Each structure stands twice: as structure tokens, then as C-alpha cells.
Image (cartoon, rainbow over all chains, first blue to last red; front, side, top):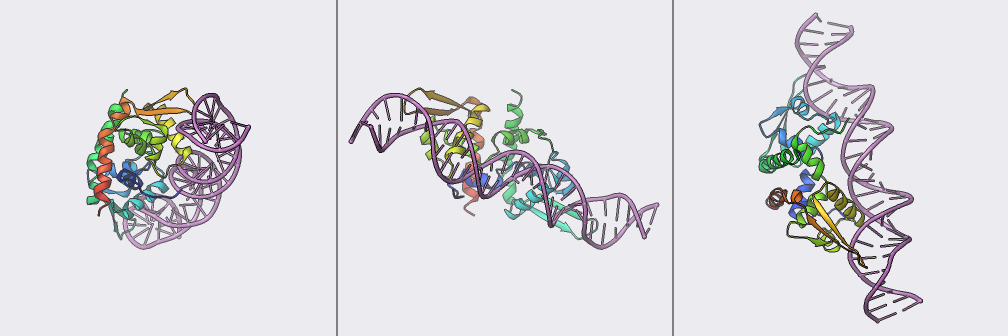
Length: 103
Length: 103
DNA sequence: TAACTATACTACTTTTTAGTAAGTTATTGC
DNA sequence: GCAATAACTTACTAAAAAGTAGTATAGTTA
């Protein structure tokens, strides 16, 4: 079964339809964060998945990664314009979860 | 690493954050559909994944499943109120994908 | 009586995703 | 000269998701 995109929603889900991507984008809505801080905001994510996921988001142009050549390392992440364009959706999903889980 | 819910968005993604769930819900926005029709609207999904996914959505109360005791079988799916409450988000995601993929 | 129908289920395999634990780096502070 | 630091990276394993192919059903139509 081939991996083809059949509609815009399908396309969107291919970009952000995973367990962690929306969480990471969501926590960057309020501004850029250092790697460690961002990761702390997402309890339950493993170190490996965190790195892997931000790298994919970077590859897809949803966030940017700024590396400072210092030791110990310093890396900052922030949303790109493309990533920021998801703000309404991410906040809506969060709101939806908030109301829904009360039931 | 335990599977715990840490924020509303995380909760929401646990319910609909998979490859096929949003697609299925999306295609039910315009009204109930027979199983075969719904499946045809989602090219690329295998028969097994279709059945499995609608069953999970039913279990989570996002859609309802009506079985007519006839031969050959007739099964209809439609959104529950809970599922319908995702309408804005699903349409937004679709729109986002539409605009984004043009770039 | 044999094929066809729409839907689902099952066993099995492959692919993808995720988790664990260890190692790397170059400078600072003791 | 040794530990601590932040952010990976890698090798390995485990678990989850997805795909393939085959089976069941019981009426209708050829």
C-alpha cells in the first residue's frame, strides 16, 4: 500500500500527526526555548524521541534550531513562520482536550 | 517510560493523533456513511486498518456504528456529538494543509 | 448450484516507532 | 587530573502499527 497524499488533511497529518510533534510545537508557542527546558516541559518523552522529533520538525521547516558553539552545548529551538501558522489549531486542540477530558 | 497524560493537548493526541483517525472523522462531517462508501473516500487505507480504526473511534465514543442485520451486511457510521465537536479543528487542519502544501 | 454481494475477522509478517543504556564532547570548577 | 555540564549520538531491543492474504456469512441473481 503506497504512501500517497490524497487530501490536504492527509498531508497535514503526515507533517504533524504523531504522538510528540504537536506537543513540541505547542510548547514553543510562547517563545524560543533551550533544548533542556523544552524537553522538561514534555514529561514522558525519552531523550531519543525528543531529539529525533525536533530534527524531523526542523527538516520539515516547522521550527528552527540554533546551535551555539560552546561547551557544554547550548541549543535553542523556536517556531518558524510555518510552524507558527499552526498556532490556532494547536490551541484549539488543547482547548478541546481540556473540555473533553472533564466529561 | 509510562503512558501518562500530562496536558490537554496530550490527551487529545492520544484520542485522535494517528494516521487514519482524523481522516475518517473528517469524511463523516458531511453525514453518515455506509462502511464501503467511507472506506472508498480514504484511498490508501487497508481493509484491516479501516475496521480497526473505526472500532477504536467507536470505543472512544467519537462515532457510532449502526449494524443492519441483513445479508450482505450493511453498516453505517456517523459522528457522535463528541466527534462532531472536532469539526472546527478538522476543517482547520484541512485548510492548513491546503494552504501549506501550495508552497 | 455457483458466483456475487458488503462487511468483518483472523493469522501471519513486515515496518515503524519507541525505549534503554552507554558513550562523546571541551571547558569549568574543585 | 577528575567530576560535572548540555545536548546529542549510537547500538540494541521491545512494542506498536500496518500490510497481506485468506475465511465466513446467507441471501440474491445467473
